[in-house]
Image (cartoon, rainbow, N blue to C red; front, side, top):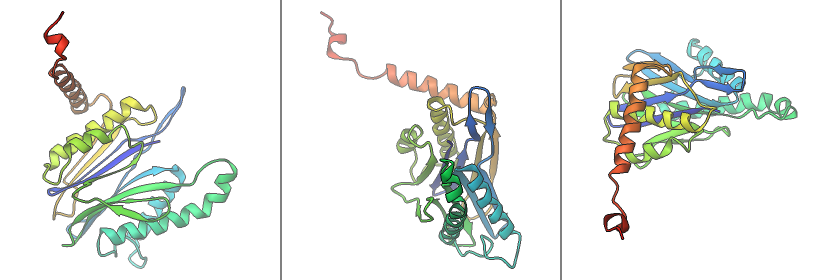
Length: 246
């Protein structure tokens, strides 16, 4: 399992993902699920992946081959993020179908899902969630974030904090808290954590971080969030019988 989130605010885009691919008693595997396709000043795409690792690797490798081949159709030719999501969905579905029967006989699903976001020229910044079936949805002002993988534990903080006027740095901190909440609840999600911030109209990654479990920034966010929650809990209204004992 994994957890990835893409956030769209007025100031730009934030992407965050864990790196755990499996977690057993005697083996923990890691693999980066954040992939960047960039042509400075022209276009930028960030792709996050979840699901079958072989499928997602095959899709990302195909995207890279296309991106580096001027004669091939691919992300280097699409006109906006929505065309990019459509292309990614078609490619992912085709690759899944190629391996679905063989994997099904082994009881393994070939499905993979993706978040893709970025900006092409002056078409504006967007982020989309691409389903295993190849279709997609886009972030909206009412739902300015999209998640894949183990989504439920990190959702409450996003619901409470993220809005279109949230600053890019606050959105990034919120993404890390969302990841940490998921890590605490599910052993199949874990560090290192990848974080990317993309400022609007720049078509490039402004900031990119990889945080280990003991990174001072990550530890500080964990401690600050935990202490803040405790203070907020202790400040909740008292029951009548607590204020008037007896």
